[in-house]
Image (cartoon, rainbow, N blue to C red; front, side):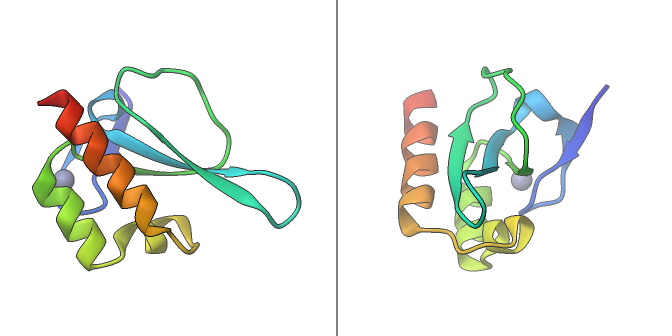
Length: 91
Ligand SMILES: [Zn+2]
């Protein structure tokens, strides 16, 4: 089994149970942030942060800038909004 760790609570679980935040290189110094939910299985290159699909872990990640630290880049507020939307869709 391929275990991954949530950037907020530190829980370890199968990587497909997490929301994945990928940083994808898009040219030399550019990158894009792509969010995929647990049902998406396509492989992407680049750094990935894993987050439990719940509001507690999302708000903690936001408060402590955990995605920034994990992906080592500036994260737009819209990224958090996008994860928020994804969570609401799952409800
Ligand atoms: Zn978590």
